[in-house]
Structure formats: C-alpha cells, structure tokens
Amino acid sequence: MRKHIPNMITCCNLICGCIAAGAGFYHHFATAFLFILLGALFDFFDGMVARKLGVSGAMGVEMDSLADVVTFGVAPATMVFTLATEICYPSFMYNNFFFTFIPYCAFLIPAFSAIRLAKFNLDARQHENFIGMPTPANAIFWGGLICSSEAYLKSPMFNALWLVLFIIMFCWLLVSEVPMFSLKFKNKTWADNKLRFVYLILCAIILLLFAIWGKGHILLTLARGLASCIGLYVVICLVNTKCTF
Image 1: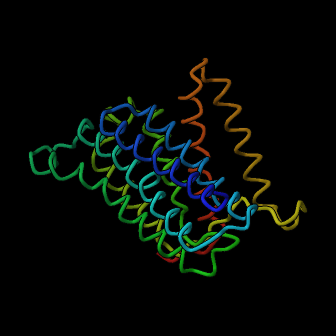
Image 2 (image 1 turned 30 degrees about the vertical axis):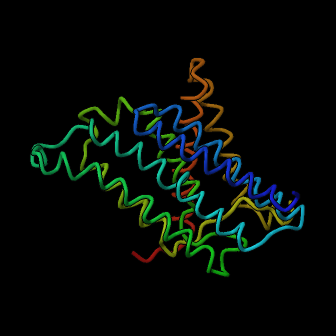
C-alpha cells in the first residue's frame, strides 16, 4: 500500500486537471483556476512523499508527467479557448475564418507543455533549476490572468491578435533554453539565494498590495496576485540571463 501513496496523490492532481478542463470549457473560470491551484498542490506533494517514503520509481515519473499535461496544459488551454470565442477581433481578423481558427490556437499550450515535460524528464541540467518555463507556472499565469481580468481581456483594449501573440510567447518560453531559477533552497544564505529572496520579497509585496485593493474578493485577488508574480518571475529570469532569440 505504501508504494501506491505517491501515485494516488498524482491521480488527485490528474482529477483536479480534468475538473479544471471541464470548468474552463463551461466558462467557470474561477472554478478552473481553483482546481489548477489544487492540482499544483498535489503535484508538489507527490514527489516529496515519494522521496520521504523511498518509493520513487519510473512509473511515478511517467504518471506525474501525464497528470501535468492535463492539469497544466489542457486545463489552461480550455480557458484560453473559451475566452477566444468571446474576445474582440480587430477589423482585419473580423471574418469567419479567424472566428473559427483562433480559438484552437489555445491547444498549442498542451502541445508545448508535453514537449516541455518530456525535455524535463530527460535533461540532467534541471535537477536544481529549470531550463525553460515550468508548466505549473505557465498554467497558473493563464488561469490567474483569465480568472481575474476577463472583463479587460474581452474589452476593445485587448483583442485576438494580442492573445495569439501571448500564446506564442509562452509556448516559446516553455521549450526555450532560458535558465529559470527554482524555489528550492539548499541552504538559507543570502549569497547562494539572493535572487530567490528578492523574488519572494517582491511577491509578498505584490500579494499584500492586491489583498489591500481586493475588497474582499479573495479568489480574484489571489488570481490577480499570482498572475502578476508569475509575470515578474518571467521578467526576472529574462533580465538575469543573456537570451538568444
């Protein structure tokens, strides 16, 4: 029984991803975002529990990747798909071809997430930090952005062209060679973890400010704050490295 506990936690991640995907298709963006977060929590604990119990194995790795494709690839893609059916279109894209084609661009997200996860499993460089954007961060960004800013995204200030550009940019980030720091601390010294400490301090400030301005809307405030924190993470990583475009 003991060896199956981590896989049971991974299955909880997968179930959360399935619920989030269904909610995304039915325009329940808050529910979808909440279950993406729950899936991320299960994803964090399955590996930890496996190491603590000493039952890590190839099957667990494969199950984890399959669950992550659903929770952090398919689920946010359904939210983007639904948004794209209701978003404004610029005049040159205002025809049936783009109305039909653009929403399906959302499914580039699970495709590139699967590539990202396969690379992660095979890349020995990613034991301590990441090469490319982690799939949970990508999913939390999309989920938080759509959940908290739906009105803006559907307004004339944002349109389908910007959405497609965002999809392309984040798909590129998933499979890029951009080094991205993890939040794993080997020790607590400032010298070895300066970037992590600065990032966490800035995140705490961002979340506090959004909590003050949130007027009691806890989930929307959390969604807006986490999307902003992920955006900050991407900016810091890009600034901190010499990127080859």
